[in-house]
Amino acid sequence: MIAIINIAIVDDDPRMLEEVSRKVSDYVDGRRLRASLHLFADGAELLRSARRFDLLFLDIQMDEISGMDAAKKLRENGTAGHIIFVTVFDEYVYEAFEVEASDYLLKPIDSARFERTMDRVCQNLHRTKDPGLVISSRGNNFSFLRFNDILYCEARNHKMIIRSKTETLECSLKIDELKGRLDDRFFQCHRSYFINLHYACGYEAGLVALENGEKIPVSRLRAREFSRKMLQHIKERAE
Image (cartoon, rainbow, N blue to C red):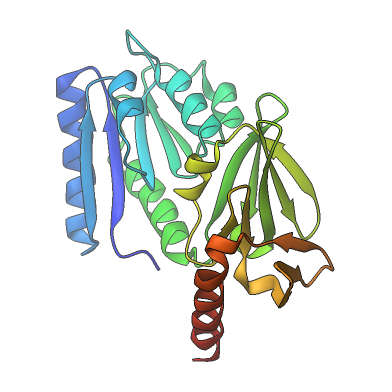
């Protein structure tokens, strides 16, 4: 269960920005949720932010970067947060499916519809106990991989290869970008590899054996830290 919901509200109309902000504030206060609200005057300002958001309200029609274009860029960059579009037009509703939007609210916003949407999204957020990684592969196709399903990630030939229990996917993520999106179950055992410690079952001669039979190199400089992290991981799983 997440402790704080990070929420972004993006609209180039100050009055609408204030209205959505007020509705969100009233909702989280009324349900005694912990939330952090961040307001942006346009899509470009949002994309410059380094913060990761659980929920984003995006106005579709904005001058510099539209909400739809911002949403596509966010998905390409691995954002897995819930996206809710707010607009006066319903002509973009089919495009919303492309970025896996959670809802599409028409202005003026109906309060009952807004609350139903927030109920559904917040229930989903609080139900999520197994986070994952959203990646863009083969153009604009987005894939969601649960962390528990990822065996390892390998940087190879300017691409990132992500090996899961059922498939192998390729994306353009840089290794530093990937590092910021993985959680503590992953360890960078080599400059080109992150392994899921959950699937490590042996270590010998500089190679860690995974449950699927593959062996991943552990660099000399990271060997001691790998042993420490592995012991810590085993202890935490046993508790």
